[in-house]
Length: 371
Image (spheres, rainbow, N blue to C red):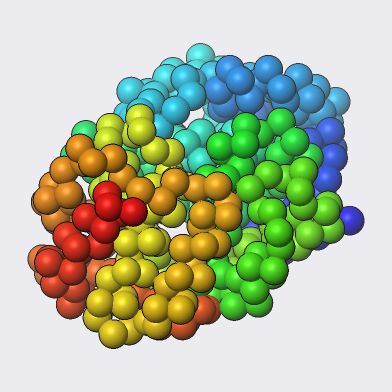
Protein backbone atom coordinates (compact mmCIF):
# COMPACT_ATOMS: atom_id res chain seq x y z
CA UNK A 1 0.00 0.00 0.00
CA UNK A 2 2.85 2.34 -0.93
CA UNK A 3 2.02 5.81 -2.28
CA UNK A 4 4.34 8.38 -3.84
CA UNK A 5 3.31 12.04 -3.97
CA UNK A 6 5.41 14.34 -6.13
CA UNK A 7 6.22 17.88 -5.05
CA UNK A 8 7.09 19.53 -8.39
CA UNK A 9 9.09 22.74 -8.07
CA UNK A 10 11.02 24.88 -10.54
CA UNK A 11 14.15 23.63 -8.81
CA UNK A 12 14.74 20.84 -6.29
CA UNK A 13 11.57 18.83 -6.84
CA UNK A 14 11.19 15.80 -4.58
CA UNK A 15 8.87 13.00 -3.53
CA UNK A 16 6.84 12.17 -0.45
CA UNK A 17 6.79 8.41 0.17
CA UNK A 18 3.94 6.90 2.19
CA UNK A 19 4.91 3.33 3.04
CA UNK A 20 3.82 1.27 6.05
CA UNK A 21 6.94 -0.46 7.38
CA UNK A 22 9.11 1.99 5.45
CA UNK A 23 11.58 2.60 8.30
CA UNK A 24 13.06 -0.86 7.85
CA UNK A 25 13.66 -0.11 4.16
CA UNK A 26 15.00 3.44 4.42
CA UNK A 27 18.54 2.47 3.38
CA UNK A 28 17.30 0.88 0.18
CA UNK A 29 14.87 3.76 -0.40
CA UNK A 30 17.65 6.38 -0.25
CA UNK A 31 19.52 4.42 -2.92
CA UNK A 32 16.53 4.38 -5.25
CA UNK A 33 17.32 6.79 -8.08
CA UNK A 34 13.63 7.06 -9.00
CA UNK A 35 12.75 8.34 -5.53
CA UNK A 36 15.90 10.33 -4.73
CA UNK A 37 17.76 12.03 -7.54
CA UNK A 38 20.63 12.85 -7.75
CA UNK A 39 22.07 10.24 -5.43
CA UNK A 40 23.23 10.90 -1.88
CA UNK A 41 26.77 10.77 -0.53
CA UNK A 42 28.05 8.17 1.91
CA UNK A 43 27.98 10.14 5.17
CA UNK A 44 24.68 10.56 7.05
CA UNK A 45 23.98 12.42 10.28
CA UNK A 46 20.70 11.44 11.95
CA UNK A 47 19.20 14.18 14.14
CA UNK A 48 16.61 12.96 16.64
CA UNK A 49 15.61 13.09 20.29
CA UNK A 50 16.16 10.38 22.95
CA UNK A 51 12.56 9.11 22.99
CA UNK A 52 12.30 8.76 19.21
CA UNK A 53 15.78 7.25 19.08
CA UNK A 54 14.77 4.65 21.67
CA UNK A 55 11.91 3.53 19.42
CA UNK A 56 13.42 3.85 15.96
CA UNK A 57 17.11 4.75 16.11
CA UNK A 58 18.46 1.24 15.68
CA UNK A 59 15.98 0.41 12.92
CA UNK A 60 16.92 3.44 10.84
CA UNK A 61 20.67 3.38 11.49
CA UNK A 62 20.99 -0.36 10.78
CA UNK A 63 18.99 -0.03 7.57
CA UNK A 64 21.25 2.81 6.43
CA UNK A 65 24.42 0.95 7.38
CA UNK A 66 23.24 -2.18 5.58
CA UNK A 67 22.87 -0.03 2.45
CA UNK A 68 26.48 1.18 2.76
CA UNK A 69 25.97 4.55 4.44
CA UNK A 70 28.34 5.80 7.14
CA UNK A 71 26.01 6.80 9.98
CA UNK A 72 26.37 9.15 12.97
CA UNK A 73 23.72 10.61 15.23
CA UNK A 74 22.98 13.80 17.17
CA UNK A 75 20.34 13.64 19.91
CA UNK A 76 18.63 16.81 21.09
CA UNK A 77 16.18 17.39 23.96
CA UNK A 78 12.51 17.01 23.09
CA UNK A 79 10.17 19.97 23.16
CA UNK A 80 9.35 23.26 21.45
CA UNK A 81 11.28 25.26 24.05
CA UNK A 82 14.49 23.62 22.81
CA UNK A 83 13.91 24.77 19.24
CA UNK A 84 16.70 27.33 19.49
CA UNK A 85 19.98 28.36 17.89
CA UNK A 86 21.78 26.66 20.76
CA UNK A 87 20.32 23.31 19.72
CA UNK A 88 21.29 23.93 16.10
CA UNK A 89 24.84 24.63 17.27
CA UNK A 90 24.89 21.10 18.70
CA UNK A 91 24.02 19.77 15.24
CA UNK A 92 26.87 21.82 13.79
CA UNK A 93 29.23 20.36 16.41
CA UNK A 94 28.21 16.85 15.36
CA UNK A 95 28.55 17.73 11.68
CA UNK A 96 32.09 18.93 12.33
CA UNK A 97 33.01 15.97 14.54
CA UNK A 98 31.89 13.52 11.86
CA UNK A 99 33.37 15.57 9.00
CA UNK A 100 30.19 16.04 7.02
CA UNK A 101 30.92 17.13 3.47
CA UNK A 102 28.88 18.88 0.80
CA UNK A 103 27.81 15.46 -0.48
CA UNK A 104 26.65 14.40 2.99
CA UNK A 105 23.06 14.16 4.24
CA UNK A 106 21.26 15.19 7.41
CA UNK A 107 18.30 12.97 8.31
CA UNK A 108 15.60 14.47 10.54
CA UNK A 109 14.05 11.57 12.49
CA UNK A 110 11.22 12.79 14.71
CA UNK A 111 8.50 15.39 14.94
CA UNK A 112 8.23 18.90 13.60
CA UNK A 113 10.71 20.42 16.05
CA UNK A 114 13.44 17.96 15.08
CA UNK A 115 12.63 18.28 11.38
CA UNK A 116 12.73 22.09 11.48
CA UNK A 117 16.09 22.17 13.30
CA UNK A 118 17.65 19.41 11.20
CA UNK A 119 16.54 21.16 8.01
CA UNK A 120 17.85 24.51 9.17
CA UNK A 121 21.21 22.99 10.12
CA UNK A 122 21.41 21.32 6.70
CA UNK A 123 20.57 24.62 4.99
CA UNK A 124 23.45 26.32 6.81
CA UNK A 125 26.18 23.68 6.95
CA UNK A 126 28.70 24.28 4.17
CA UNK A 127 26.06 26.65 2.71
CA UNK A 128 23.62 23.82 2.18
CA UNK A 129 23.70 20.02 2.20
CA UNK A 130 20.97 17.44 1.64
CA UNK A 131 18.17 16.92 4.15
CA UNK A 132 15.92 13.85 4.28
CA UNK A 133 12.87 14.07 6.51
CA UNK A 134 11.54 11.00 8.34
CA UNK A 135 8.60 12.35 10.34
CA UNK A 136 7.31 10.20 13.20
CA UNK A 137 4.36 12.35 14.36
CA UNK A 138 1.10 13.03 12.56
CA UNK A 139 1.71 16.77 12.62
CA UNK A 140 5.14 16.41 11.04
CA UNK A 141 3.85 13.92 8.46
CA UNK A 142 1.09 16.13 7.12
CA UNK A 143 2.68 19.52 7.57
CA UNK A 144 6.15 20.28 8.96
CA UNK A 145 8.16 17.79 6.89
CA UNK A 146 6.80 18.99 3.53
CA UNK A 147 7.52 22.36 1.98
CA UNK A 148 11.07 23.20 2.94
CA UNK A 149 10.35 25.60 5.80
CA UNK A 150 13.10 25.20 8.38
CA UNK A 151 14.08 27.25 11.40
CA UNK A 152 14.08 27.95 15.10
CA UNK A 153 12.26 30.22 17.52
CA UNK A 154 13.36 33.59 18.85
CA UNK A 155 12.42 34.63 22.40
CA UNK A 156 10.11 37.25 20.85
CA UNK A 157 8.33 34.96 18.43
CA UNK A 158 7.99 31.56 16.80
CA UNK A 159 10.02 30.56 13.72
CA UNK A 160 11.48 34.03 13.20
CA UNK A 161 14.89 32.57 12.29
CA UNK A 162 15.03 30.16 9.38
CA UNK A 163 15.47 29.35 5.72
CA UNK A 164 13.68 27.62 2.87
CA UNK A 165 15.53 24.37 2.21
CA UNK A 166 13.62 21.64 0.41
CA UNK A 167 14.17 18.00 1.43
CA UNK A 168 15.51 15.43 -0.98
CA UNK A 169 12.85 13.01 0.23
CA UNK A 170 10.10 12.81 2.83
CA UNK A 171 9.65 9.21 3.98
CA UNK A 172 6.49 8.57 6.02
CA UNK A 173 5.89 5.29 7.84
CA UNK A 174 2.33 5.38 9.28
CA UNK A 175 3.25 2.54 11.64
CA UNK A 176 5.16 5.02 13.81
CA UNK A 177 1.83 6.53 14.80
CA UNK A 178 1.15 3.40 16.87
CA UNK A 179 3.72 4.57 19.44
CA UNK A 180 2.67 8.22 19.31
CA UNK A 181 1.16 9.61 22.53
CA UNK A 182 -2.54 10.37 22.17
CA UNK A 183 -2.00 14.06 22.80
CA UNK A 184 0.49 14.26 19.93
CA UNK A 185 -1.84 12.45 17.54
CA UNK A 186 -4.61 14.90 18.39
CA UNK A 187 -2.24 17.79 17.76
CA UNK A 188 -1.63 16.46 14.27
CA UNK A 189 -5.36 16.24 13.62
CA UNK A 190 -5.51 20.03 13.98
CA UNK A 191 -3.42 20.34 10.82
CA UNK A 192 -5.52 17.70 9.05
CA UNK A 193 -8.69 19.65 9.89
CA UNK A 194 -6.95 22.78 8.61
CA UNK A 195 -6.53 21.22 5.17
CA UNK A 196 -10.22 20.41 5.13
CA UNK A 197 -11.12 24.04 5.83
CA UNK A 198 -8.67 25.72 3.46
CA UNK A 199 -8.43 23.30 0.55
CA UNK A 200 -10.21 19.95 0.59
CA UNK A 201 -13.91 20.09 1.49
CA UNK A 202 -14.23 16.34 0.86
CA UNK A 203 -11.58 15.70 3.52
CA UNK A 204 -13.56 17.86 5.96
CA UNK A 205 -16.72 15.86 5.20
CA UNK A 206 -14.82 12.59 5.63
CA UNK A 207 -13.62 13.68 9.07
CA UNK A 208 -17.06 15.00 9.95
CA UNK A 209 -18.66 11.64 9.09
CA UNK A 210 -16.15 9.61 11.15
CA UNK A 211 -17.30 8.87 14.72
CA UNK A 212 -13.85 9.00 16.35
CA UNK A 213 -10.78 10.84 15.04
CA UNK A 214 -8.93 11.43 18.31
CA UNK A 215 -6.85 8.23 18.32
CA UNK A 216 -5.38 6.15 15.49
CA UNK A 217 -6.89 2.92 16.85
CA UNK A 218 -10.34 4.21 15.89
CA UNK A 219 -9.31 4.69 12.27
CA UNK A 220 -9.09 1.81 9.81
CA UNK A 221 -5.62 1.55 8.21
CA UNK A 222 -7.11 2.43 4.84
CA UNK A 223 -8.73 5.57 6.21
CA UNK A 224 -5.57 6.63 8.03
CA UNK A 225 -3.62 6.24 4.80
CA UNK A 226 -6.27 8.26 2.97
CA UNK A 227 -6.08 11.05 5.56
CA UNK A 228 -2.30 11.11 5.20
CA UNK A 229 -2.48 11.01 1.40
CA UNK A 230 -5.06 13.78 1.10
CA UNK A 231 -3.29 16.00 3.62
CA UNK A 232 0.14 15.52 2.03
CA UNK A 233 -1.34 16.07 -1.43
CA UNK A 234 -2.95 19.34 -0.28
CA UNK A 235 0.37 20.56 1.09
CA UNK A 236 2.19 19.48 -2.08
CA UNK A 237 -0.39 21.20 -4.31
CA UNK A 238 -0.01 24.50 -2.46
CA UNK A 239 3.78 24.40 -2.13
CA UNK A 240 4.29 23.49 -5.79
CA UNK A 241 2.38 26.65 -6.77
CA UNK A 242 4.10 28.94 -4.26
CA UNK A 243 7.36 27.59 -2.87
CA UNK A 244 8.41 30.61 -0.81
CA UNK A 245 5.09 31.96 0.43
CA UNK A 246 4.75 34.90 -1.92
CA UNK A 247 1.02 34.40 -2.28
CA UNK A 248 -1.09 31.22 -2.19
CA UNK A 249 1.08 29.36 0.32
CA UNK A 250 0.05 31.81 3.02
CA UNK A 251 -3.26 29.93 3.30
CA UNK A 252 -1.34 27.17 5.09
CA UNK A 253 -1.05 29.61 8.00
CA UNK A 254 -4.77 29.33 8.73
CA UNK A 255 -5.11 29.34 12.52
CA UNK A 256 -1.37 29.81 12.96
CA UNK A 257 -1.29 33.58 13.40
CA UNK A 258 -3.17 33.59 16.69
CA UNK A 259 -1.94 30.06 17.42
CA UNK A 260 1.70 31.15 17.38
CA UNK A 261 0.87 34.06 19.68
CA UNK A 262 -0.78 31.66 22.12
CA UNK A 263 2.25 29.37 22.06
CA UNK A 264 4.65 32.24 22.69
CA UNK A 265 2.59 33.86 25.44
CA UNK A 266 2.33 30.56 27.30
CA UNK A 267 6.09 29.88 26.89
CA UNK A 268 5.43 26.73 24.79
CA UNK A 269 4.53 24.88 27.99
CA UNK A 270 0.73 24.95 28.23
CA UNK A 271 -0.21 24.03 24.65
CA UNK A 272 1.67 22.13 21.98
CA UNK A 273 1.71 23.45 18.42
CA UNK A 274 -1.34 21.58 17.15
CA UNK A 275 -3.39 22.52 20.20
CA UNK A 276 -2.50 26.19 19.73
CA UNK A 277 -3.39 25.99 16.02
CA UNK A 278 -6.75 24.45 16.92
CA UNK A 279 -7.44 27.36 19.27
CA UNK A 280 -6.29 29.76 16.54
CA UNK A 281 -8.72 28.21 14.05
CA UNK A 282 -11.59 28.59 16.51
CA UNK A 283 -10.67 32.25 17.04
CA UNK A 284 -10.34 33.00 13.33
CA UNK A 285 -13.62 31.24 12.63
CA UNK A 286 -15.24 33.52 15.18
CA UNK A 287 -13.62 36.60 13.61
CA UNK A 288 -14.84 35.52 10.15
CA UNK A 289 -18.40 35.37 11.48
CA UNK A 290 -18.00 38.80 13.10
CA UNK A 291 -16.87 40.21 9.74
CA UNK A 292 -19.70 38.54 7.82
CA UNK A 293 -17.36 36.31 5.82
CA UNK A 294 -18.42 32.92 7.19
CA UNK A 295 -21.68 31.40 8.29
CA UNK A 296 -22.33 30.47 11.90
CA UNK A 297 -23.13 26.94 10.73
CA UNK A 298 -19.64 26.50 9.20
CA UNK A 299 -18.04 28.01 12.30
CA UNK A 300 -19.92 25.59 14.52
CA UNK A 301 -19.05 22.60 12.32
CA UNK A 302 -15.37 23.49 12.56
CA UNK A 303 -15.66 23.88 16.34
CA UNK A 304 -17.34 20.49 16.73
CA UNK A 305 -14.68 18.82 14.57
CA UNK A 306 -11.84 20.35 16.60
CA UNK A 307 -13.57 19.22 19.78
CA UNK A 308 -14.15 15.73 18.34
CA UNK A 309 -10.41 15.50 17.69
CA UNK A 310 -9.90 15.86 21.44
CA UNK A 311 -8.24 19.25 21.13
CA UNK A 312 -8.61 21.99 23.78
CA UNK A 313 -11.22 24.62 23.00
CA UNK A 314 -10.57 27.24 25.65
CA UNK A 315 -7.83 29.35 27.17
CA UNK A 316 -7.28 29.75 30.91
CA UNK A 317 -9.02 32.69 32.54
CA UNK A 318 -5.60 34.10 33.49
CA UNK A 319 -4.49 34.35 29.83
CA UNK A 320 -3.61 37.95 28.93
CA UNK A 321 -5.74 38.41 25.83
CA UNK A 322 -4.54 41.99 25.20
CA UNK A 323 -0.97 40.71 24.85
CA UNK A 324 -2.00 38.86 21.70
CA UNK A 325 -2.21 42.13 19.76
CA UNK A 326 1.35 43.10 20.67
CA UNK A 327 2.62 39.62 19.86
CA UNK A 328 0.96 39.69 16.43
CA UNK A 329 3.02 42.71 15.37
CA UNK A 330 6.14 40.52 15.49
CA UNK A 331 4.56 37.77 13.37
CA UNK A 332 6.24 36.81 10.07
CA UNK A 333 3.01 37.52 8.23
CA UNK A 334 3.04 41.25 9.00
CA UNK A 335 3.32 43.32 5.82
CA UNK A 336 3.52 47.12 5.78
CA UNK A 337 2.61 47.12 9.46
CA UNK A 338 -0.61 45.12 8.93
CA UNK A 339 -1.19 41.59 10.20
CA UNK A 340 -2.44 39.32 7.43
CA UNK A 341 -5.07 36.76 8.38
CA UNK A 342 -6.36 33.77 6.45
CA UNK A 343 -10.14 33.97 6.69
CA UNK A 344 -12.56 31.15 5.84
CA UNK A 345 -15.41 31.88 3.44
CA UNK A 346 -16.77 28.35 3.11
CA UNK A 347 -15.57 24.84 3.92
CA UNK A 348 -12.64 24.42 1.53
CA UNK A 349 -12.42 28.13 0.61
CA UNK A 350 -10.37 30.87 2.30
CA UNK A 351 -9.05 34.33 1.50
CA UNK A 352 -6.28 36.56 2.85
CA UNK A 353 -7.02 39.93 4.44
CA UNK A 354 -5.14 42.55 6.42
CA UNK A 355 -8.31 44.36 7.47
CA UNK A 356 -9.11 42.65 10.74
CA UNK A 357 -9.98 45.21 13.45
CA UNK A 358 -8.09 44.76 16.73
CA UNK A 359 -11.38 44.68 18.62
CA UNK A 360 -12.50 41.66 16.58
CA UNK A 361 -9.29 39.82 17.49
CA UNK A 362 -9.70 40.66 21.17
CA UNK A 363 -13.34 39.57 21.17
CA UNK A 364 -12.46 36.22 19.60
CA UNK A 365 -9.63 35.55 22.05
CA UNK A 366 -11.83 36.50 25.01
CA UNK A 367 -14.52 34.15 23.71
CA UNK A 368 -11.97 31.35 23.99
CA UNK A 369 -11.57 32.20 27.64
CA UNK A 370 -15.32 32.18 28.13
CA UNK A 371 -15.91 28.93 26.23
